[in-house]
Length: 179
Image (cartoon, rainbow, N blue to C red; front, side, top):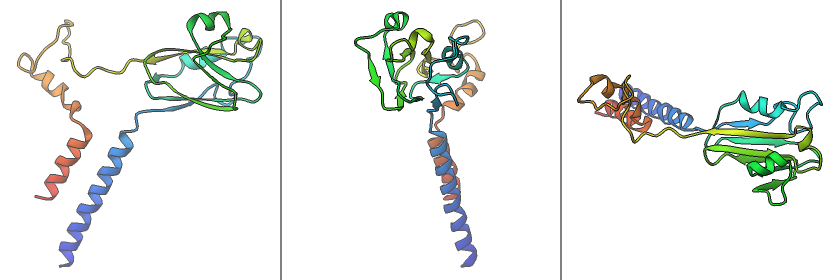
């Protein structure tokens, strides 16, 4: 009876570990603090590209969050032309609460400027490029750039293996223990 309890306990423990692992892996978004320790401030006079350099060193994906930390300032999401002019009377988004989080909800370019007069001209502006989401609906390409099907090349079938969802894998593993 004790060994049956131990086996059942091990199965439950394994299931809990696998479910916890899957929840951990499903988190696909990242949070970024704009400007790292400096926050969202007017850059030093010789570093007008500070925020664009910061953005270029990060890899942004859809659903990532950028956090602007500032005092007595603001952040605006604007159009490309308003970014270039350092002015916007109709921003796409505006906040001046000192701690602003913005979710990057689509791929493409996001343009940010300070809403305080003169700050943008001094370099308090940034462009973030959000990468496109990978498309899983087309077959993989071979070395020639043409698509292949599993019938043409057995390696393509193996390349498709990672497309198996983690949930499917976990259920398969759990099934082995409950048979």
